[in-house]
Amino acid sequence: MQPSEKALVPFVSVDHMMRLIHHIGLKPMMAGIADYIRDDFARWESFDKTPRVASHSQEGVIELMPTSDGETYGFKYVNGHPKNTKDGLQTVTAFGLLADVASGYPVLLTEMTILTALRTAAMSAVAAKELAPHNASVMAMIGNGAQSEFQCLAMQEIVGIDEVRLWDIDPAATAKCAANLSATGLRVVPCRSAEAAIEGAQILTTCTADKQHATILSDNMVGSGVHINAIGGDCPGKTELAAAILHRSDIFVEYPPQTRIEGEIQQLAPDHPVTELWQVLTGAKPGRTSAAQTTLFDSVGFAIEDFSALRFVLDRIQGTSFYHPLDLLADPDDPRDLFGMVMRAS
Image (cartoon, rainbow, N blue to C red):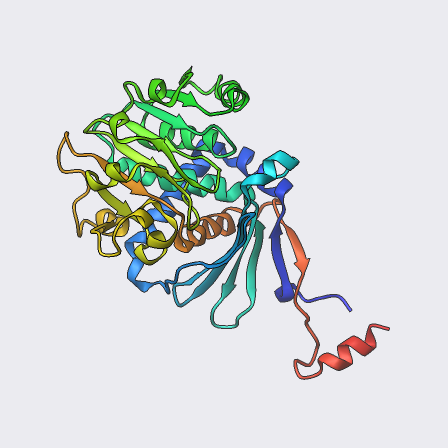
């Protein structure tokens, strides 16, 4: 028995995702995801929100990130295992799903290893557009792993930077990133230290992988008036910034109950004041208010951002060949006769 069309779920494979990116264009796709994020953050209060459901181990973390706006439900499965690169594996892998709330039927299943990189970069640029100094043109990219190129190109497309200064503890990672960015129109400056990388930069992005309390940026390295985009934090016990930087920065977060567990602010008192980014995007609260202000986006990623990226993909694959109709749902002629469907298959 052939499944009915209503029982077939669009599945976007890794190959499909790469083809979709080249069809749309990498930078336009990140800009499009950024628009969907802004739209969904504008209706933040309509979403179910919960810290991600995490299973931690000494090696890393496996998480589920669910949310719903009452009409559509979405979740992402994602892992974070910093040691994986030593074994030739990705640090982060992911897949995601959207479903119709009214019926409970899935309407999209997709890879999200690549898509998460795009939405993380888009989210960084959305925040920096609001919080970075006016006409910021130089970004320091501290940590030149799998996320770095996406971060740089999203900042170029959405914020308008024209120079990136690269540093990683592994020179091979910096060389890789510089080579990948060589034809993008960005001025790329490989640096020999984190101190050299942040020289002259108005935006400081930290994205390192080690699962530890690290001090990638010490207090004396960071002057006033910059925007810090801290995206490496994703689990308890992992930080990148000296606590003193946090105490003199205005801190912006996605969802405080999650960020206080996994972000830079896990170093601070539970009642330390922070501003939720959706409030800035809707005009409810101010973002950058002066040239001398040091702003910090303590980003750990949140389910609504993934929901936005999934919505974008579902909309963009309509009428294309960038998905496979997946026979995922049992579809008996009589919904009450699942057993009969199984027996007739013989």
